Length: 171
Length: 300
Image 1 (tube, rainbow over the protein chains, first blue to last red):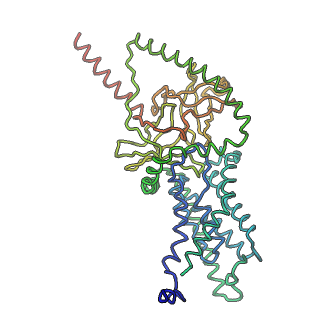
Image 2 (image 1 turned 135 degrees about the vertical axis):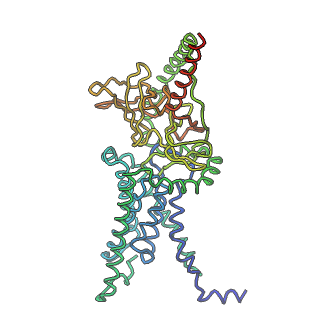
Image 3 (image 1 turned 120 degrees about the vertical axis):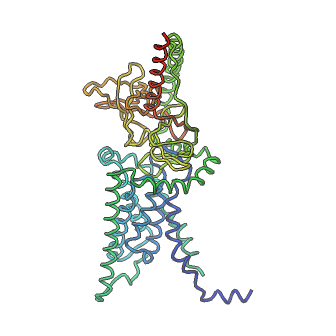
């Protein structure tokens, strides 16, 4: 129909969609613990973290520095970590990423992956130490499968978030 | 992708201040996270209402999914099994043989036990179960070991009640919502279970290690009497768990104690049974007995 084609030009996507999609996907990612996967040791990738990292690295301009706090808090509700754990660690990651963004001269895909991997390792180890510092400080091998899985999964999550982002801004 | 240029403030004081303010907010978020963490440590149950709301909100998803895909439970195991599969296989073969003989021994012991109980006319029944339900999800992405049970306070569940399966002790109820309950698994680092060796009731404590094993420390420090294959059962001291529930099997010795594998692997537990707190049951039993004694005495 020519009418609708004409109206597509210069049409803006709804502000609600533009504003709400990123945090919404992060919360859905945090809810991965709702899946009936019952394990004896940590193995499931922290999807909330992967999604927020993908958004943060794809759309640096969208995120405020403080955004790690509220979304981390929601992640804590579902993850089983003591409340405040992700809120604290994600805030730190956001501050570091902001600093990095201001310092960096150029950035490519591999650097994004490296940054995301470092952040994942930092948050997972930090979360483990927060749970129990004394008995966990020498047992990082416990996290190895989860870290490996998360780092390998990150590019796929980034692809997915990229696709969602295209849809988000498309009119 | 290079960072966008508008992030560089240039000489504008206003732009520099706004960057400073955004950093300040970010740091404020981190500090508030730390404060919340502190509160969580001082009062671990303080935010249970929030977590309960979260668990209740996603419970319908978990419940319907766990009905469909019971097989997903051991996904983690299956992935992990690829690491050093061959040596594990050999070790498992050896263990299987060992367990076979142990099971036979246990059967004989059970029969003997029943016969002795009959002789003594002991009517020591396992406390009634309060509820039976599926474990619907767990904190599989966190270092904590908590699982969610598909029933809650509507079915009479309370914090502290032991949860077991036919294989052994699963954990105890930590928080309850109307239709869900959080279970602190035996393998969680914050869970300490009073146990004893099945063969000679040597008392010990089993502390979770977060990976399906427990650290077993004897109460008599200095001696290390454990050997591979020892079965640890609940001792009943502390009054939470009724005595005699299998907890773990010793898989190797350490300097001061032993490492044991938890018998009730939550990934494979299809149904968990919630029991009343043992102490409450005992107190009730003693009251009943004493009343009976009085009646008998008055009858004589």
